[in-house]
Image (tube, rainbow, N blue to C red):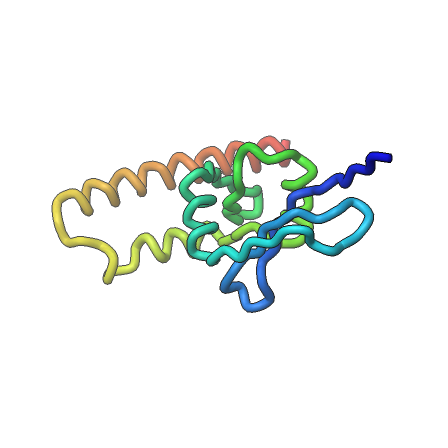
Length: 135
């Protein structure tokens, strides 16, 4: 009589967040049949090297960073769990304009002029959208 064991891969983060545990476990039980400890730095650098991230802005001015190439179901789970980085647009602008981070050179002045133009365009588009709701 031949028996077979079906194994599924898993990856978990340790409670302290310092390491991951990868392995194989059976369908019927939670017991691991193979475990491999992996330092968090090694896993995360590999994942980030392959990650494709996008930024979206919601109508209320919140920026959200989310990974591309994942299913809608996983994206919804991440959103419901509030696991995606979110930042108000004004905070992003404030950080961009931090005097300690701005280099006082010609490029900075040119870049700030481009930023102002982008913001003016964004305000115009917002005004047009608001006008559409009020008409």
